[in-house]
Length: 250
Image 1 (cartoon, rainbow, N blue to C red):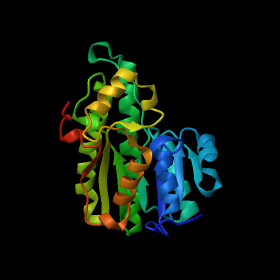
Image 2: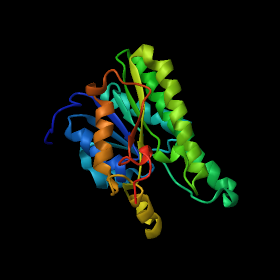
Image 3: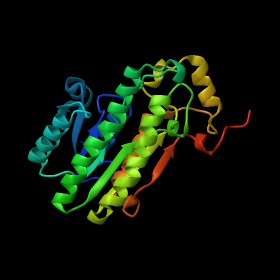
């Protein structure tokens, strides 16, 4: 393993949703920066195929309290503690609000919001008990500001922002920092299915006039996970090419 800068040297990091996309890119970046990585995904075999034997691959549904508890206990047993959580596990089930099925609503809220709460709480409690603090990086989305056809997804990601702020307040006294990323249109397997017309509209409305990459989000996760952000907590960091600032001129 070749270290880039060793910014996570000696630290133990959990990355969820690590089988592909942003989660995989982040797990790889953390590993290159010296972290011992535990990669959680519903598909542990895919994690092993993607990341190899240098990571501890754990299959778990982040919205299952028992599965989360078991995963955290296993990581503690393997590594002795947890310093970083970068949580990317999430799903979409898009539809206009008028056509949104309650099953799609429930599934997205369950994974994206309840799952975030369960894994973040379990890790924060471990960090508090250990007494050494740590960094929790949640994943929201630019969509939390509102996005047509994503009422369930936007609501879940808005909930993540409120959860993040609250946990930052509650756990700050224990030196546990809690922040959130808000990616815009990023090239991932999830966005690969977006119709070309919508894709073009998203890029045309972005001031930098391009989609982002998983590696760019991973770099932001590294910043919030490491000591360079040691006095930052309760913050939403947009990685969206300026899209949150406003629409790009025609």
